[in-house]
Amino acid sequence: MSQYLIPQALFLDHGTEQIPLVQQYDYLGFPMTARGIDFEAHLTRRIGAAVARANFLSISSDSWGPAHRLRVFKRYLAPMFEYGAPLVVAWADSYSLNATKFRACLAKIQDLIF
Image (cartoon, rainbow, N blue to C red):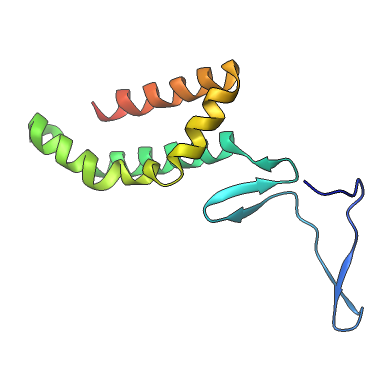
């Protein structure tokens, strides 16, 4: 978090070109704000990507058995959530409302895949 309440302007080229201020930026795949990582936005993006990938995979998945569905999940969908999982779980454990949101996201993924 910044120590300044009002962000200070930054300039390039000896003060002729100002660097634009942003409210959010991505750092190592996580959306960063002045308050830290926006975990809700991160989960929303990951779930959206998983839904899109699952929809693509479901085109021919009607004939797949449980073993093949599990292999596809482990290969293509699970890695989308494994990166940063300890941070997301720590966020979920820090406050009961976060845990509720986290469980709702997990339920949505399970309903989609299985």
